[in-house]
Image (cartoon, rainbow, N blue to C red; front, side, top):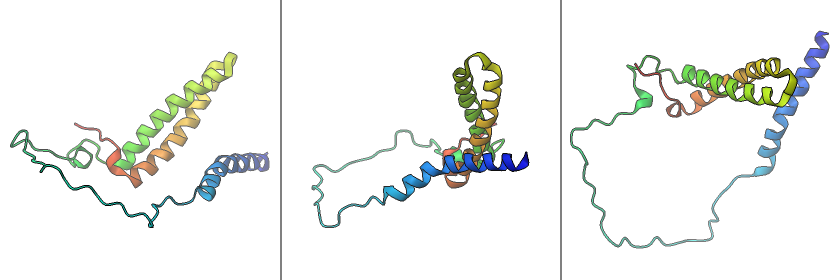
Length: 135
């Protein structure tokens, strides 16, 4: 029984990773052709910038340490879990037909796990993208 479970998990992981590995292997790196040199056009008019409102403090919201929860990893995991559970639960429920409720619950649980993992990765790689829970 346990051996069959591990075999099924291994097959599922291979099936999930295989398309990503194929894209990485065959995509290649995008780069500009160094042989073509294009001259930038000369500026026509000088651009003048003026402040719209003096004294208006502009602060980064993603780096506010006084927020109720300013950790991007936790917020990314929570947002990913909510989005994954909602989307996967809806799609699983719609696709099952007569077994709507059990399929929706299992799909929501699976989507929440995947969403949490993706949210953690996004919070670690690009913390400025994840919103904070503000007071």
